[in-house]
Image 1: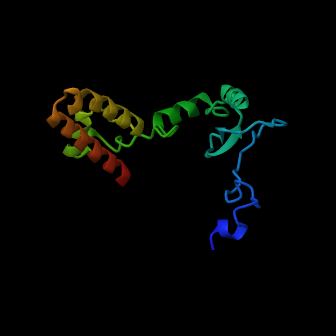
Image 2: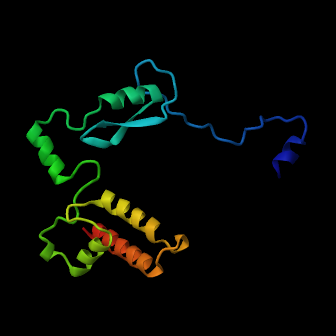
Image 3: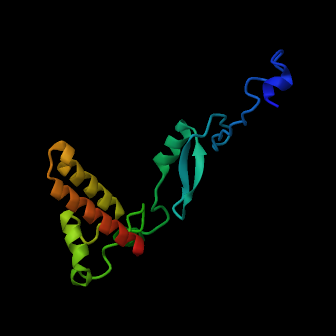
Length: 162
């Protein structure tokens, strides 16, 4: 039996939105703020996957004071920067000397103009730049474009294997 035949069509016994679920809205986690919490901010450098949810004003205040390296000595901060283990910029290529890398990986890195210490962020940035330069729809060389996409595919699969 259809909903219309149960209610006989008139009067409308249910509201217009009776079939819809209520939407969940996050509230700002700042003390005594009643605005919507649409902006996320990491809780701490050790918990980058856990977030506070703030309104725009409180997110700006929180981010202004945010310091990933707070509580670390200068030497510890520099060591972590060298290791590249912050902000998803781990160095995947630096697994040994250039001679230990396979020739295919070395040539793919040369196609995309990547250095040994570059990570995922640099790989994606270099790929986007090269694709824009050499895309056939923009008058670029189709063979060079295929070479760039093959190099990106090889390097991204190489990253997933590690």
